[in-house]
Image (cartoon, rainbow, N blue to C red; front, side, top):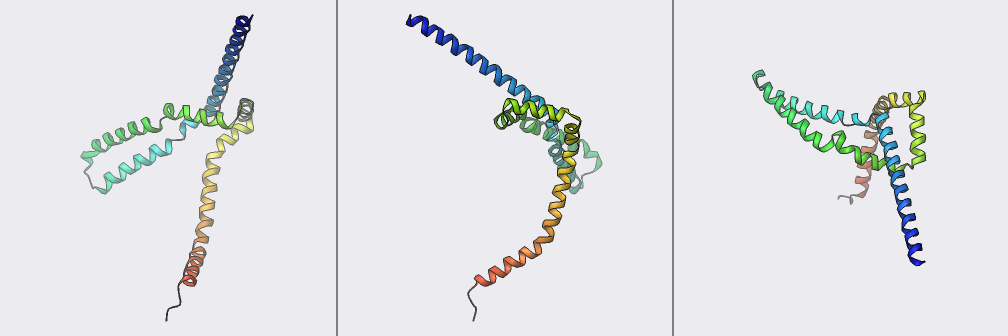
Length: 166
């Protein structure tokens, strides 16, 4: 009888672990679908563009003749390859899936998917990059207006901390 109990327990454990694996796979698949809806594969596009611009700027600063443009393009291609190995979609996708599955349970992922598949959710996804950029500019502009006052306060504090000079 103890063997039968042990066999049943092992079978139950195997079934439970298979279900947990299936749930984890489903959860990961939901996270991947969400990332696709959110167009997460385009997150690094600005990085690629910025690196390309850095190479083009360095090329222009070096006053290289136009006949050397192939050299610039060759190095830009090498930079793209290096970036692809570091931050390409297939490289970062597993980490992003883990990130989202660690913060949202399966039910929450399904609710996120439902929302972002709705008309309002699609609009949020479409407008969010522009809204984020505009919000950052707005905050930066307001911060720049405060910098002189903050610098004055720092100078005043520094002056008060200085021992009186004879």
